[in-house]
Image (cartoon, rainbow, N blue to C red; front, side, top):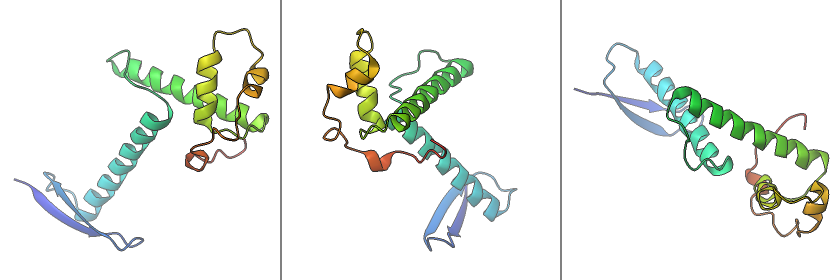
Length: 133
C-alpha cells in the first residue's frame, strides 16, 4: 500500500507528486524529505561529473568516505592552485593536464605554459563558486 502526496513548490509554482509508504508523517514533511533526497542526488551527480570517481575501490562505508574525501580534497587543492595562479582554464582542464604530467619532472607552472589554456575551457561556468579563493 502506498500513499500519494501532491506538493506545489511556492518558489517555482511546479506541482510534484510523491509516492511513499510512510503514513505517519505529515504530507509537508514527506515533501521536504524528498527535496533533501533530491539535493543528495544532485550532489552525487556533481561528484560523478567533477571528481572523476569511476568506481569505488572498497565497499565498506569507511572506504567510500575516504575515497570521496580524497577526491574532494584534490578538487579543492586544484581550485586553490587555479585561483592563486590566475589560470584561465577550467578545473577539469587543469586536472587533465596534471594527470598527463603527473610523473614528469617538469615544474608545474611550466607544464601549464605548454598548453593553450584559453582554448581548453569547455565548462568554466559549471564550476562551483568557492568563496575566499
